[in-house]
Image (cartoon, rainbow, N blue to C red; front, side, top):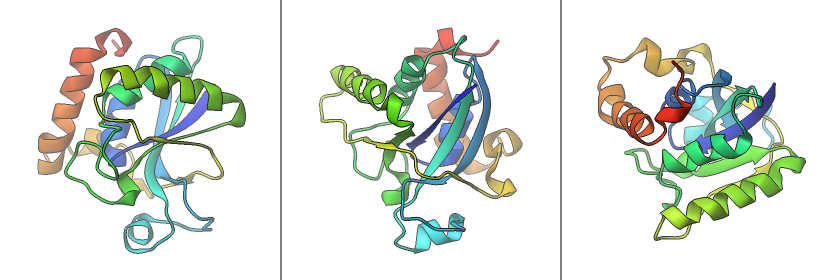
Length: 175
C-alpha cells in the first residue's frame, strides 16, 4: 500500500470523495503542512498561526489506481486556482490546496499539476511539498460525511462535490 496526503478544502469534503475511489483502502482526516507541532487539533489550526492545512491521508493500492489517477481526481474535484478557498464556503490558509508526498513522488505531483492546468483558465496555486508529519484529527472528524449525511453542510457543500466526482470520474468509483 502507498500513501499520499492531500488538502483540497475542508477535509470532510476531500475524505468523502476519496472514500469512494476504487483502490483506496483508507482515508484519514487530519492536519499537515505547517510548523512542527506535537499536538495540532481542529481548534489550534483554526485559531493559531501554525500554518497546518486540513488534509486527508489516502492509503491506496497502486495495482488498482495510480498516483497520477488519484491526482487527476484531486485536481478535478476542487478549485486549485483560488488561494485559501478551493471552491467551497470555507476560507483560510487551513483550507489551501496542497499535495504532501514522498520526495520520490514530487516529480509525479508536479507533472500532474502541470497537466491539470490545461483544465483551468487561472494558474493552479496548489502547493507541492515533501510530507513532514501527518497528524490525524480526532474521531469526531473521521468518516464525517458518511455519519452525517443529513447535516446541512453535507447536503449543501459535500453533496455537490460528490455529484461532480460521480459525473466526471465514474470510471474510478467503487462499485
